[in-house]
Amino acid sequence: MHTRRALIAGLLAGLAAATIDTAEAAPPARRGRRRTRRRVRRRVRRRHRRRVRRRVVAGRTLLVVPVAAAVGWELMVDNSVYVVTRVYVVDGQEMVDLQASNGIVKSEPVVREDTADNTVEMEGSTLPEDDTTTPGIETEV
Image 1 (cartoon, rainbow, N blue to C red):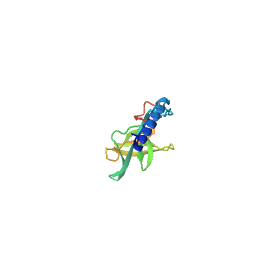
Image 2: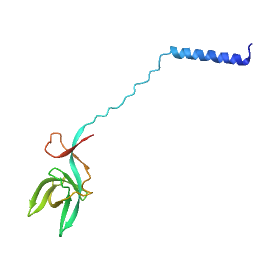
Image 3: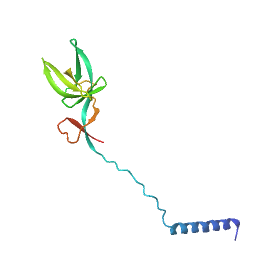
Image 4: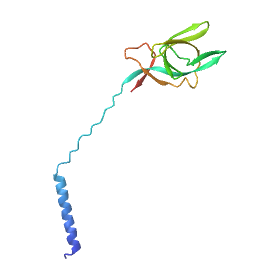
């Protein structure tokens, strides 16, 4: 019993069998090897950097610095970055010497207090690898 339906089904079955045989016989398609970039993490030491504000106390303008501020820290005063080079006391008032990037050093009276502004850690400048005495924070880059 040959009908059109049986003929078409037979042709499709034969075509499918031929396609499967040729697919199995062909070597697998070789895809180019996908290159991935490896991320290399380096440990970098950076200076502590904090933002400080000015406060008027008894008619004197003082910088409000964090309690832990020390020599080697960067302080951001009026949108300029200064490095603390010396901490000393004059007539009962604590003073710091701040050095700008152009080398100019200025002395400022300070009061130590942790506030919402100066407790936020900012990204400081990178320290040389051989510098082990300056306080800093180790981060991965």
